[in-house]
Image 1: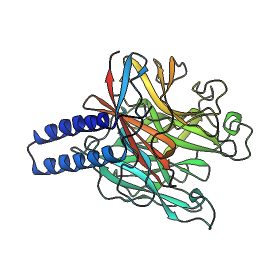
Image 2: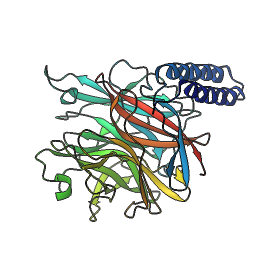
Image 3: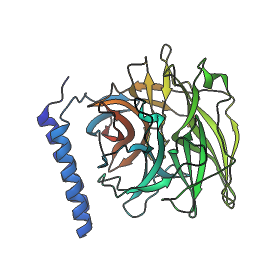
Image 4: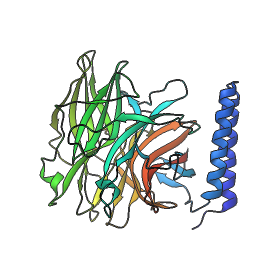
Length: 377
């Protein structure tokens, strides 16, 4: 079912008017410039992406209606795969005025000719980002390669205190941690932290199993001395395009910045993969401002097979998602997207924003966003 172009333009006009009026009331020249930039971006999107839009999706007690999709949110010509936004220990976006921090990954060294880009070397960048207007600043290096690392791909970023920021990143098939006194880095790897493949469910019969952090965490305890979290991670059986999500318990010393793996949740993978599906991965943050009714929501992807990937929502009264009340698939990828993953969400102006990494048909890894109205059915 193809989206009506006039309807797409109407949605864009509504968003443009809303953002312009709200920033205009701020009464600053800078705010007006941001509004104009946002409206220009939305207009370009309307012309280029008047594509399929399904009707409202019922997710638990609410209906979600997509009002905006931008498959290439950032202006970068090179790869700029979404990694993470910066959240505090309570699961809220960390703001500096009207800006937060956005972490992305880019190719540092190309692979051998004929090999996929992911066999090259990748580093992470950071930039300021306005989560309302979607306008971003210039990127700078946030995390480089350490020792024998092949990748330094940030997927989780946490403000632990005013002078301690911790990121978890994927490299060489495992998850490592890095710290900085500033949100924009440069982050320094913790030499002692490593989350590696050890469990049967992580291996899944694969000869090429790996782990990745996914952008999600929940706070277990937060004292003046230590922040203890459950870190969401996923397994990936590369040769089978399969995997699942699980928790690892991690402590962060606020005085020394040391990051320590306590243990992995002995209950194993989360019950997020329906029978017959091969993958339930890339689960996102559990934003404290993103609740659907009285339910926690996790956005992740499902793979019924190697060819199909869908944005999916799981609802639970339990923030650990050990008991899941409902699983709702949003449908296939949109536009030129071939892969979608690493989802994070936030609420802004009563609109649900889902920001994520995608791979386009051109081979470009980038940052995309979908925005939804949230209504009672």
